[in-house]
Image 1 (cartoon, one colour):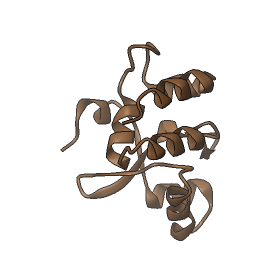
Image 2 (cartoon, rainbow, N blue to C red; image 1 turned 180 degrees about the vertical axis):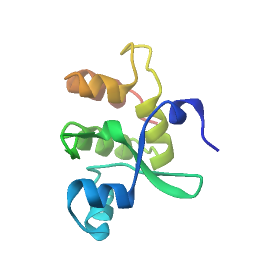
Image 3 (cartoon, helix red, strand yellow; image 1 turned 90 degrees about the horizontal axis):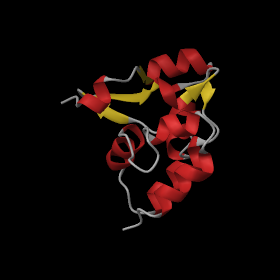
Image 4 (cartoon, rainbow, N blue to C red; image 1 turned 60 degrees about the horizontal axis):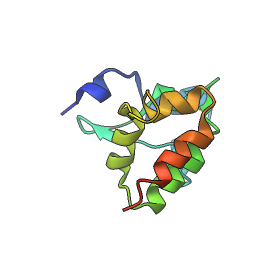
Length: 115
């Protein structure tokens, strides 16, 4: 089931990423394992928000934030939900704050979420 925070975004599948990044599907999966990208299943298909990429590359600021969320005990689904949901203290969704150069602020907020 697609929620509003998911339906408001543009999504890429693994084949889309293979074409865009010019790498194999195995390499794309390695990007997920290395937390350079985060994917969730939507209607049974593994997808990544297009906002997680810039200039056809994974957003550089994303990895540290995803590692921090994983260390805080967030599942991939929980981390995705947090990244795409407007955060009151940031005034926008964390991914939008990251894209606008507010990496330190986003990570500070993420660190405060530790379970």
